Length: 365
Image (cartoon, rainbow, N blue to C red; front, side, top):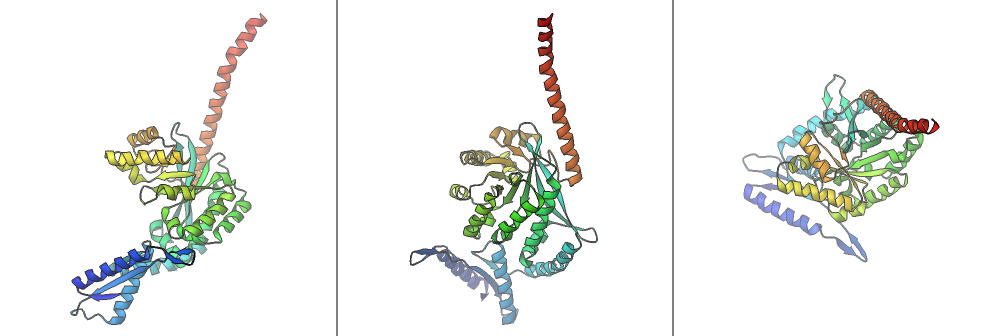
């Protein structure tokens, strides 16, 4: 849409928001209820600017795509920063393709520890990309671009294969991998996942896919169908970043997550005010009622760790314990943990066997 003047712009935005509200209600066709969504882009001009109509339409189109990226069912005004971002995206587009071909991607792993004893029980695979010149690019920057380009499925499968190969030797430790909304919407994703599990021989019960609320709300029917197939393999599903969206109890029951991951912001805020603390406690209680385990993310202080542990969190993740590590460092930590457990088991055996031997000797004497 195109509009001129601040007052007229306000009126137009009101009309658009009213339209979105009407579209939010399902349409009944026969016995079916159909949901229709919309994404609206707005551009503003004044007579003094003399912006050509073709340019106004282009700006509206750009703003519309920003509405889609923001989650649909919204209207967005054009900003000149959108064009600046598009230029940056074009540069990343060209480099992403060569990054895949030249193997510039790498994985790091952040351990999750048991809340009671601090042992490593899981690792989360984190994608890293350093350009050919060594400059790191944040996943928050290149993953949305990869989704727009259609490369996210190829990159995502590479992540899964690499992570499964790295974690194969870490027996008893769960591997968590983040899955994007675009991957989950791809009907071939569950099939490819099954092929990877068979190819690598990785135990499905050791794999946990982390998804966000966005993955589900955009197309819940397709998402639920894909998750049913994935669970059929024995793979667990975790809801990531809980506390930042609008997930309801009905939403959680519908998708039957095995784990709830409390977002860092909820953990931090719970230590600052009673309202946030009550929200954290109720979230953990809800997860328990729905038979989900709970991981607290972003734990950076001893006070936060004690708080979420007492509240009932099963696992803790954050810089207080470990930052993201290369697989070689996880290997070292894993071996040290196994050796420590074996030493503890040996000491326990000796402790229990010595009195028994003494009693036997007394009886023999």
